[in-house]
Figure 1: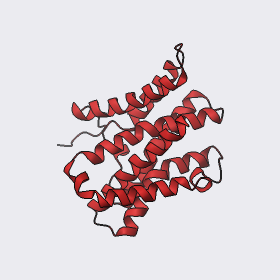
Figure 2 (figure 1 turned 90 degrees about the vertical axis):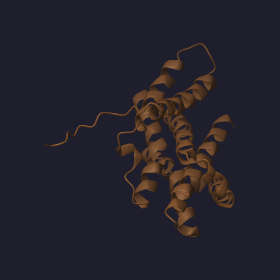
Figure 3 (figure 1 turned 30 degrees about the horizontal axis):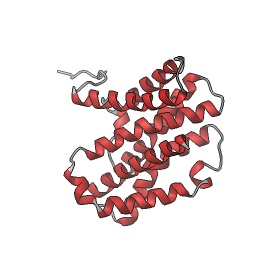
Figure 4 (figure 1 turned 45 degrees about the vertical axis):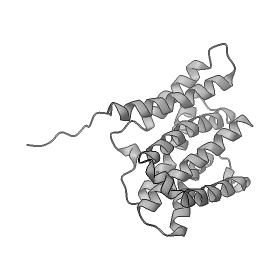
Length: 203
C-alpha cells in the first residue's frame, strides 16, 4: 500500500506539470490530456518495457488512467490558482522525479536487477515522461540541459542503496531517498549549480 501511494502521488505530480506546460502552449482540451498522460506514464511505460512487464502497468490497472483524468480536470478548474504560484511547474516536476526515482528502483529490485541497473531504471522512470512532454511541446528536454535533473535521481539512487545498509526499516530509506532527490534538485536551482558545458565559445 505504501509503494502504491507513492506511485499515485508521482502520477499526480507529473500530470499537473504536464497540464501546466500544455496550457502554456495553449493546447486544446485533448492536447492537454495527452501531454498530462504521457508526462505521467511515459517513464513508467519505458521502464515496464525494459524489464518485460507487459502489458505495462497502466494497462493492467485502470486506476492510473482515472487518476490522470481527475488530475487534468482538477488542474484546469484551478488553473488560475496554480498560475499564482509561478514556480509550481518546477515544484511539481521536482516532486515527481523524487517519487518516481524510487518507484523505478523498487521495480528494478522486484525484477532482481543489480543496484546500478535499479538506479538506471529509477532515473528512466523519473525523467523520460518529462522528455516526451518537452519534445511534444517543442522544447529542449530539461534532462539534456545543464540543470541538475537526472543527476539528482542518480545521486538519490546511490543514497538509497547506502541507506539500506543501516539497521532501519526499508521504508525510512525509501522516504529519505525521495527527499534527497527533491533536496538536491531544489538546492541546485537555488544556488545555480549545474553540470559543466563541454562547449566553449569560439572567438
